[in-house]
Image (cartoon, rainbow, N blue to C red; front, side, top):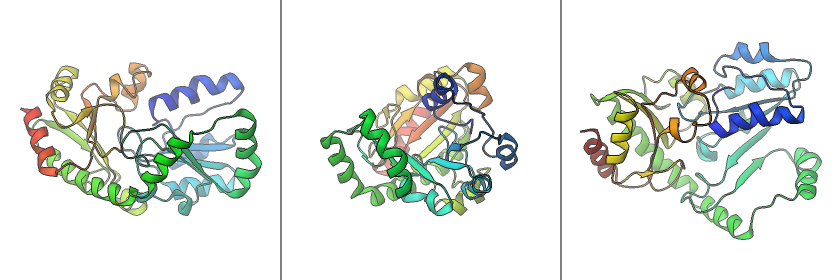
Length: 285
């Protein structure tokens, strides 16, 4: 899918081809594009849903059904939804990937990741690769992530409920052009979100009226939200995708994805919702 995290897209577009990997990008929302993109040498479908930063959704079950028909493996980046809100494996996915730094850790303390797959894939593909190339998480980082898993459900559900309330609040504000959040009733893929997610997630994005100047002015006036490109933290975070997560893309690439200079991404934490609303209202004045 073309709607990917900036660095991920850079790796797939410009680094993997150096090693002989052929890549075709599609509009992941359009099921027919997946079918049309299949070639004799197609081995993997890769996508994230919801996507970063516009929360675009891909029908996991529909794409996986196509993949299985052609004996193609499906890899799902489930970072935004987290293992709490969405279960890609139950919808037919073969491999699920996570950044452990996000919801699994929950407090932005360590770097780490996770790959979930069948025992056969782990034994035949993943285990030999890891054994002979050497990547390994440190014991301390692993311990932190395991401790994070103990509270992930209660954290993510509380943050998601707060995110919905914040999204509904911003959707009615006169200085907001548009809000992107899967569980908003006016979200273009609301029905799909309700079908494959239990809640809307901890992340929302919106376009403030104006341009980069207005976006930066708003961001710099916030007191509770930290300015960072992390997400899934118990601390609320604000991000400007154009100059952070997707800065590596060209302007035309960003615009083709709908990532404009007035786009702002919020990761909602566990602070009191009324305090977050007050912070947003003050920054919007």
